[in-house]
Amino acid sequence: MTHQKRTKVGLHMPDDDLWEYDYYVKKKGDPTTNGKGHRVVEEEGKRFVAVPGKPIWKRTRVKEEEVNEVRDLQPESMRLNDQHLYQVCDELSSALLTDVAIG
Image (cartoon, rainbow, N blue to C red; front, side):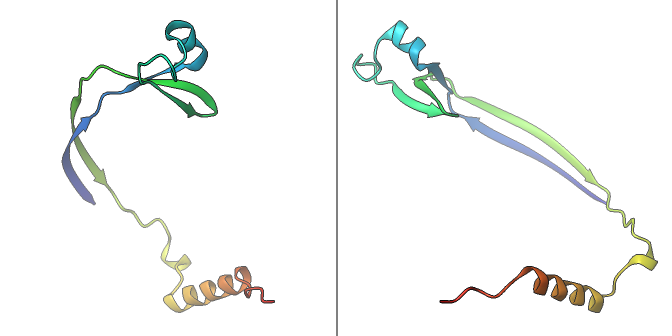
């Protein structure tokens, strides 16, 4: 059994708002010519305009605790010895790996 405790501290930069491109153009004009410096970006196949969020950073603290219990559920009668494991690996390698094509 293992037991671990740790504390993580993170610093998160301000998020950007992603405005749908057409909505942005209606509200603020063409982002390439309106002088605001907002960038056109593509996310998941859609066009957006990245607008910087408020310049507020966030610090997060997370306390974690983890306990792992390791159990061997395989009965002794089903265990393979090392030699047999090597043999099985060799057979799998031979079956799955073919020679490199030449020519």
